[in-house]
Length: 232
Image (cartoon, rainbow, N blue to C red; front, side, top):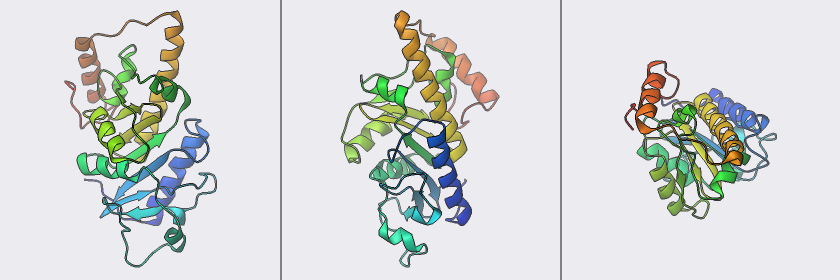
């Protein structure tokens, strides 16, 4: 199983994907957060530092209980930073989903707009299968950073690689950071298309049996993460 050490490469990769997330327009300002599984815990973005200014030694290495991973701080700036307020959500996903190594949470505009109505994204388009199921669920609203939010998100992510968070944003999870970013971008694209399609009325939904076929084909061509089967 992929479980890399905390290294300069891991830190640079996390910064790169965080800045790509901003450049792709799926996140704004200081909102959102990212993490990657490392030996003994995770590397996560800090709280309240703009991504454009974030450096490798700003990232925080913590175990899955939120404690600093090192007795002796390896990166000096890390000591003065705080991990993202959503660290528990990341930790609980990594505890529950051993096949997952990367988590991306963002406030992409169209996905968040749908989530503000407490709705998910139905199977109006075959690409909803990118998230591993026939739809993309929306977790009910809970306060950011709370254990309640973490629990609701875990339920919405069951057998899925993405979910929406009501009145909040979206979460994408994957085997690696590149794939998590790809899924998050696709979720935002689907949300945009869905909102546009709904201007003509609720679009038709693809039925469950057809979505199972799509999921099977996605698995065969490795189009989405392969750990979840086609019958979810």
